[in-house]
Length: 135
Image (cartoon, rainbow, N blue to C red; front, side):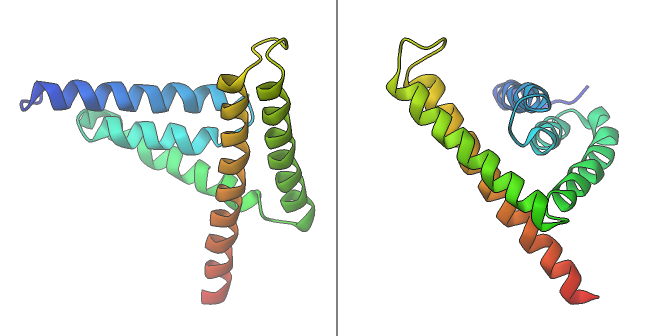
């Protein structure tokens, strides 16, 4: 059992668990699920070393998924359109509180998901482009 600051340990546990939970939810919802699962595991492994054995396999799968997302122009276009659809849906949900889960709390999370998809798409493209330039 690790010793140290219990406040830090609890904070790391809570932040890591939240990232992990959101990442697991985003595996079936639109968003960067594997990358958030990876982030949660990395945070948790910093205080709970037994979890380190899961980091590399998840990192490998997350990086493969990132590369696959920019493997063709069709996939890139699909990701751009998915981001656009999420932003549009977020605006609709934000402006219509009568919709199920309507309002800006749901709308802003949809908009944020769209921007995250675009950011990850750019990051993935740059990563693959740098890898191609080296070979």
